[in-house]
Amino acid sequence: MKNRYDSGKNISAAEFNSLNTDEKIMRMSSDLSIPAGKNQQQILEAILSGEPRKTQPKIIKLSNYFMAAAAAILLLIGFYSVSLVFSNEKIKTEFASQTTVTLPDGTLVTLNAGSKLVWSNRSFDKERTVTVDGEAFFDVKKGSRFTIKTHNGNVTILGTQLNVFSRENEFRVSCITGKVGVSSGSSEVVLLPGEKAGLTNSVLQKTNSAHIEQTAAWKEGIFYFEDQPLVSIFGEIERQFNVSVQYNSDANRSITVSFTNKKLEEALDVICIPMGLKYEVDNKNKVRITENNR
Image (cartoon, rainbow, N blue to C red; front, side):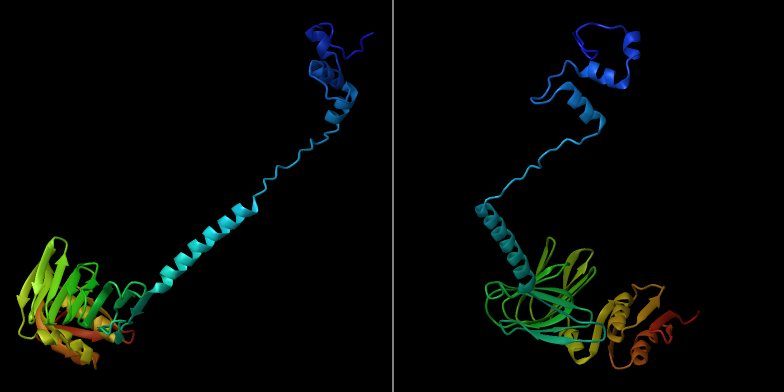
């Protein structure tokens, strides 16, 4: 005799709806295969009790060889990254300060205020290359090619004295002694002693200067500008005296001027008086410059 859960005979929808919950479950699952060692009643009780299904977590074992190889790779990557960081030397000057550096080949580099010099100890003996951001004077030891890189252009020399200025979109190179090759984009020029080059509309222009040595006089605290715009000169005032200069008039007006970094007011006098300007200095290191007729 079949029990009441047997699906051997078909029943109507009305009859199915009249079954209780247990009977409906058994009716619907009666066609499924029953695991060995279990009967329908045991399955029903497990379903109704909410007994969780036990599954074994899958564990993937890595061989000792694989783990050792992975560790070695990570160690090499870490060593390479650290060695790259520590192989570079970086010298940086703050505002109102200067410093002189001796490179591994004996080349002397003097950095002006607010400037940065970077080179690689790892490769310097094979490739004499440095990067400059700001202004620097180089007394290069004779030897293999010496390259100075800036974001505005590059300078190539064998052994000479020169001054390099590269800030934002300004780029100037002065050759004191020797011979200097300067490149920026598609422009290239060769400088001899007494010559200088600068960017004009993204093109290098070469000119002669009777006062070429004075372009590096900043090493002694003397700053010489030959036909330079006020925006460049006031920028140097900011770096040498660690002040903020506010000037809203024509900053592209040019002037030839020389001043020292001893006293701020004296430097402002030699710049402003010939240009018909006046200035005010507050106690918060701010300088406000206006036209004299205002």
